Length: 261
Image 1 (spheres, rainbow, N blue to C red):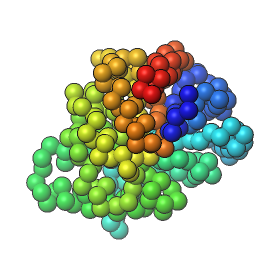
Image 2: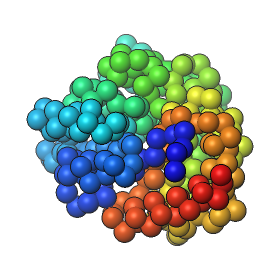
Image 3: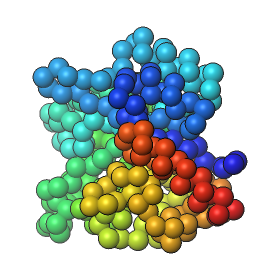
Image 4: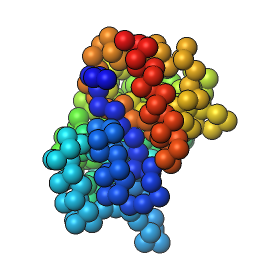
């Protein structure tokens, strides 16, 4: 069925490399989230130049796009001070993937030290340093709107709001993280939707990133109806892993979208 948004999923559907997953998914979905890692021991799945060329060719042939998930939660660097290693990893990832012209770079903000109601001056300093850090990332990524800030589980639901209110980044609304914390995501999705470039959808069954079939119709239907009513044109990523969860999620979502119509 015709939908306004770009349906996507992750690069870990097949137990294979990025190119194999992209070829498998093209024609089924419109976007693939590159879930990347770059470990200190040298283990990495950052794409080579040849891999990027093959992914670009597929994208041009199939109307296919990519979102890129940065490998580490971003810790703020001090303005004018030493850059945190998480930012170095982000820079390396952006450099390896920028030629793909990603739909967005998905960014986690590491606020573990300040999320539990710290002193106002500590929180203010964290926000200031994070704004400076995001400005640095934006220079490498090709613009501040290429950065989609994601909400994380275990944080207050509006934790990132004071930061995103001060810089023209976009949003990645992760519905599963809200459900995992027992929070209704609909009010937060509705408020963030004008700036939302990516939405992550996954089921919760003891843990998150399960098949979308674990989302009851009474929870999923209002979300889909909102996206259809507002003609959301960003990416909706089924953030699941493995072919079985992808197939069941895809079929369930198609059924729910037909009902929403």
